[in-house]
Image (tube, rainbow, N blue to C red; front, side):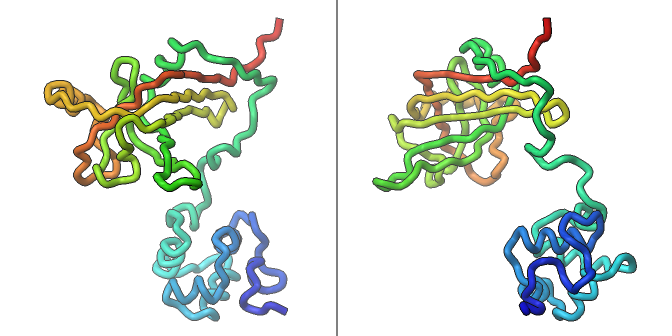
Length: 234
């Protein structure tokens, strides 16, 4: 027997994963994180016996204890106590009769202009290692994508480095969406007037905060995209 190190949700007859209850959500999240009951109790500053009681309660929870548990489990307090009010991304299921259609380059740029967060893929800098992928908030500037970053950060790719940039949109309610992929090279724009104009544009401030003085431009040599649409019935 595994006793308290059992990660399946607590004592016999207790809540099972997926239960619509605080206890069930605690056990499910603990399993997702690969954490034993003892580990969770220690990190939350409580005894294992007290945590067991919390996991087996249906009502009368101590809000302070639940807040500590939510912090350790890296989940919002409201999600732990009330459950999710939205569907987790990608869980909504496909649309009825979906078809995958290629976008024209013009359609790709139109969609890029409506978005502000994407993923940059660049060489890791070490031979034999996989590329690095990081999220960045971006602007469309002409027929290129620009973003700001820390000169010593991961997204500060060197001039001339081969890069790929991707962004997408998914409508969870309908199961429809699109994605656009740019392949090209990195540039470091340096014209002061152009950079000042970019800095004044809405959405130019990096979400990560701090000093982000390096502008990087993704100059694409290939732009492709796809969209998921419902099949039109004749």
